[in-house]
Image 1 (tube, helix red, strand yellow):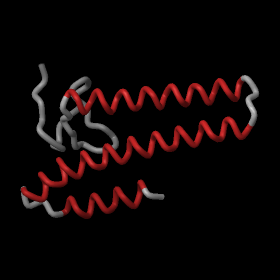
Image 2 (tube, rainbow, N blue to C red):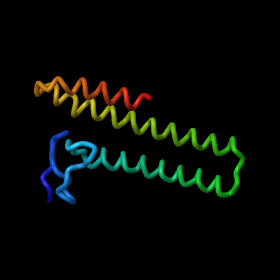
Image 3 (cartoon, rainbow, N blue to C red):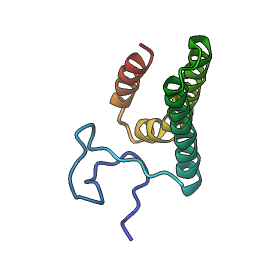
Image 4 (cartoon, helix red, strand yellow):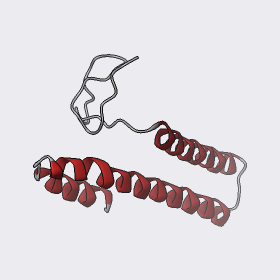
Length: 115
């Protein structure tokens, strides 16, 4: 079994040994957090497929738009949950370790997310 990192450390991807093109940092999540986030994403994926089927079946535009709004809301909720987790774990941990640059990283992330 691969070594579990506590939070936001820099490590290669366990499957390939390669570093992600997005960030070399990693976040170990508890099994419960991981399952909760994955379940949310799978529900969202199902909602998107539902929108696709509505379009294929020539559903009325406002009906599709309402479902798209529900998908957007679900994605926003997912983002809020993930952000809260990040702030409570990685950000706090980095600040306690004297890595105050995490605040700039958080602000930069918020600027990108809140477009």
